[in-house]
Amino acid sequence: MKKILGRWRGAIATTLFCLLLLWFHTMRLSMWSISRINNIIAATSLSWSSSTYTFNNNQGTRVQIRTVASQQNHQLLPPGELPMSNQFSCNRTYLRYDLCTIDGSTVLDPTTSTFFTMDPTSPVHVEKIRPYPRKYEDYIMGQIKELNLVSGPSSPQCTIRHEAPAIVFSAGGYTGNLFHAFNDGLIPLFITASSFYPDGDFIIVVAEFHDWWQSKYAEILKVLSKHPIVALEKDNATHCFPSATLGLIAHGFMTIDPTLIPTSKTLMHFRDLLEKAYTQNPILPSPPLDPKPERRPRLVLTCRGNDVSSRRILNQDEVIQVMKEIGFDVIVFQPNRYTSLSEAYAMLNSSHVMVGVHGAALTHALFLRPRSVFMQVVPIGTEWAADAFYGRIAKGLNVNYLEYKIRVEESSLMEKYGKDNVLLKDPSAVQKKGWPTEIMDIYLKQQNVKLDLVRFRKSLKSAYLMAKKFMHKER
Image (cartoon, rainbow, N blue to C red; front, side):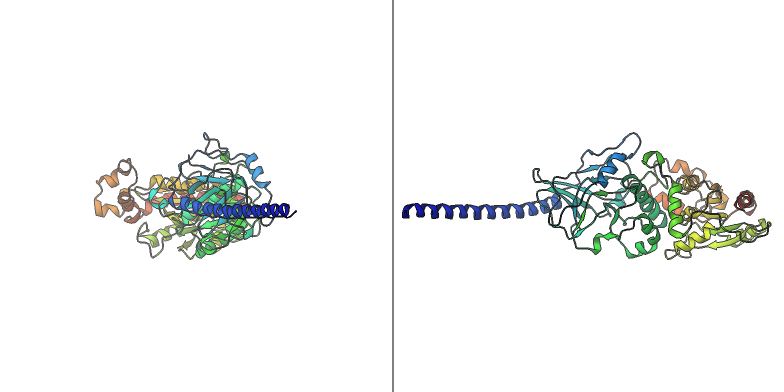
């Protein structure tokens, strides 16, 4: 009997020792996995992989509606559980942007800028992305924060759980410039949200967040998403999302291509969003400035600020006088980084004509009503950019568009380089090999304009006739 009891005690002791050894090995494996993941994140260079996500490569980024639906149907994990067996994919085939999607539960660790998914059956896999849609521009992309996507056997515990998916992007780069804030940020965000989450239920997650950015664009951001923004640099708690999209889809300069969006959104839909952000009413014609039929159309002259030394109208006072003689009520608008967008919207949304020299301030043309008038003064050497950046706004919003292309005699560059210099006589020949910084700076940073009042008056008269026609229809 004693021998039997002794054998049982020995067996139990051996079993307990084995269980203790197994627990110790498991803990070592878990710690090794976390350490291994961190080492891979630190050591891995940008990994180029083909995407398994559903895209139509012949028509840009055409996101399939069935994929959107699958992302919306993910359920949250019970407290204490970690995401299991999820995959992410990255599409790097597009000129302007990379796009990574996590089609399942993920944990964000903002302290390491890393999104984790768990897959205990596969080796650790890491991807990296700079979520800013100017991939073709090496200089600025080098300044964008790199985010990590990690799939492996371990993942951090979740502190904050969200029911809505995430769209993740950077507010760095050129975002301090109004044109780039819309062209590289807000419009691509609208496109991406419309493509993946047409119901508008998503959370904005921002890398390189700035308080001034949130303050300046607060009204637009609140209409885009009802959820509080998650700012990577201001957070140290882990966040769980049912799915996530990293990167923003861009269709081109100030462009929304409805054929590439399941819901066929256009720039007019983005304009509707601005209307909702800055007013409480749908788009309606503004009340007349004066009930009399002989009222004058309102013209907003957008000017460069005093802190800007280029692309200014050197004879601005004379130009304003001509505008008044033709029959306009003139408002001089000189925006700066502190200008309230809601006030700018109210002013332009109630105006009939906007005139300005090519520059970021013309981004305010997004606030013009359809069938109003937009005239862009185009300095020498900026013809392509003028059409690509701001001409497309007019076309997308059904605004009457006029270009006043200055002549050599109207450019301040003539005094410095002479009227026969190729820079002035044939700028397209100079730009055939691209737009290097030294050439771009000549046209954008060294040039002012002195408008030919006789010639410019003719363009203003055309704008006046269009404005009066617009006013007649808004009665």
